[in-house]
Image (tube, rainbow, N blue to C red; front, side):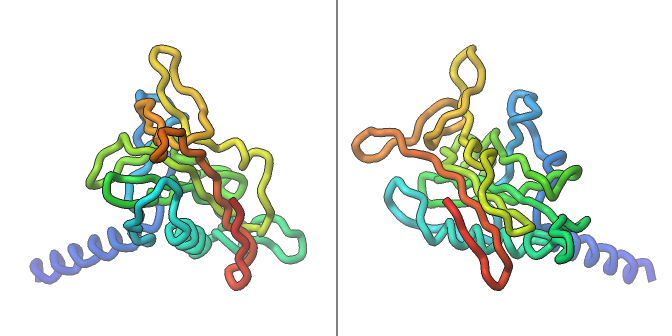
Length: 209
């Protein structure tokens, strides 16, 4: 009987572990103890890595990421039809898109516990990739709007942060590593960072950059 109970318990734990779909912001470690610089693990298993040369984030990675965001619990069609207000399950999720020495990847989705329908904090501390560590260049962030709204002014301000000596952390509109290195193209020019939004309905999504 004890073996049966142990077997059931192990099976339950495995099932629970396999069912994880996102991280809570409160679960993430902070870079240098700064509450604003959450570090998201990667890669997100729902989005296959994309092997492609070049300095721009591949469309295949972006489109798959945005579609996968809308498939998360409460990410779309989660508002009352009569009022347009978010239901209790309406949720925004944020991810970071980054590049390893080998391919392009996306971090696990992050959501807040409080005010989940209003906003999610992007992982401004960067990603912590299972294979390549936590100092990879972030090329931008993607998130969803559960009520089908378009981009807001706040959405246009979510750029990577990077360390600038003793001056602390600054916001830059270019792909950058947390340690302060800018990603550059073949001509040595910094590569612009982007923000992406998934909104609309599951059967009629709208994607913005």
